[in-house]
Amino acid sequence: MHPIAFVDCKTTHLDAEIGEAWEVAVILREQDGEQTTDTEHVWQIRPDLTSFDPEALRIGRFEERFAVPLAAEAAFTASPDAILPMTRARAAEAITALLSGAVLVGSNPAFDDRHLRKLLGPGGAQWHYRPYDIVQLAAAKIGAQAAGPLPWSSHILSRAVGVEPPSAEVAHTALGDARWARDVYDAVMTPEPYPVSWEGRARHAVGLYTRTAVELEDTRRALAKSEAAVKRAHKLASTWAVLRAYGSAATELRNALDGPSARPTTQPSARGPRCGNNPNVKLTDGDRQAVDQFKTYLQQRATTARVSDLYKQWVKAGPPPFGTSLSRWWDARLAELHAALQPAAGAQQDGAQPECPPGCVACATDESHDPAPAAGARQDGAQQSGEQSS
Image 1 (spheres, one colour):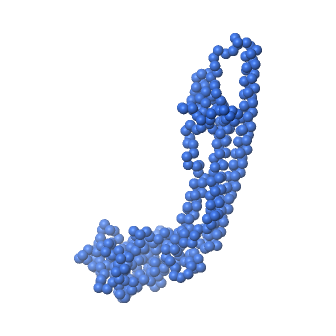
Image 2: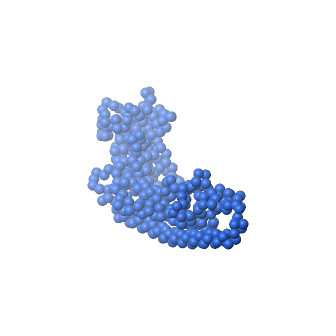
């Protein structure tokens, strides 16, 4: 297997017959069994500036980045902290040895091939005779028709296979562009779960929407079960209210029949409505179950509403625009779905004192009951107060 060399050159002119390379970057990929090793190499060579294109030097930021010491012809500059001066001939020998037998991959590698041949001299081009352009590899990945009319844009096709082009800080540096070529190559050669074509994207999108619809239907069914449980809780609360009213009437009748001497001399410890925010009342297990069921119902109803709104938003937005990174686009969709499935921001935290919970027996039967919690009133305190008074 041939080693792969991701290459890029910065030059003094677009025409190799006029200008020459002043920076060469090579990322050599070698395969040893199942282990892959990438090694980065960068050289800068002092160019002949008797004839050059000022625009070419400006794009490559020659004046800002050229780091060869004044007394040297070239330098190994892979590490900015350790510049290794050398002769031009020594740099050419090192590049020749490194590229021997390798397959060149780059963005317009034919351009790099011409300038490397001029730099290394006769017999220096010992690499494979067919270089590979990442633009053509990306177009082959998504399909020539999807790539659009010629000439193809390297940035658009790079994003089409999920690779963001270099940022302004590293763009048009030999090593930055070589790394970009490597990343596009890896994205192209990595098997996809679906064909990167419009038909493949459509099938994949239909699959995602189908799974989302199934999850939405499951949530709706769970919501229906919760609504049924809440109805049962309300019915049970009404029954409790009726029984309590009969119990109060029976107590008053018994007191009237027994006479004043039989009446208790102390007031009962439980005063006020049967509410979790009343410090004088202890909720029964049935009260707590009704409140918990209603809270669950409210949370599930809110989650269903958020997922339903997100589904409508996706349908309205349609497929990703051409040139958009699919991996980033799907990551954003999954992040939106994850956020929609989470409890709404600002929801009541565990341990915090809420207002009177939905499903409270007193609220269901007494319209005059104030559901706002009293200052410092907690159900735990209510239980302790009730136990002490009893």
